[in-house]
Image (cartoon, rainbow, N blue to C red; front, side, top):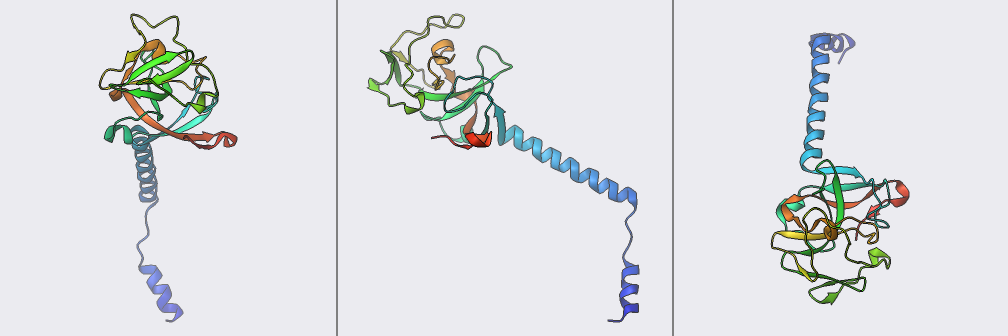
Length: 195
């Protein structure tokens, strides 16, 4: 192809106006923002953990990666780490470990958690004892052994000596589980998934 033919073909391409280019950029940015917001709202999220109730599994100020799809399609299982709205303060999101599900009986004996009369192996507590709490929220009445009602879950922090959990506010509804925590994403020296 000759240089003249190439030049003529280039001249035939319609030029886009600056207004059209600006509009395309604005639309692209809007689509990216909408998709990002939808992902955060319905699929994934990252939370900064402001308390030490899950130490050592999750350290103070760790950022955890969560997914929001699984809780809608399968029942929560013991040992999973979940996020949910604080039953005592709707402005806070809590992260705790599921210890028992509806129909199971929780007992705390001599600092050990028993589920259906079976002592639990809980290496994530690093030997911290699990005792009932002296003060309970509002009119919550927990008497051990305690059978978790159907549709509810019993949650506890891994830092058993410094966690306000189901021992304080009682069981929570499975429907209140917002997300399943997958692992720590920041800081990098804590990076990793949960067992």
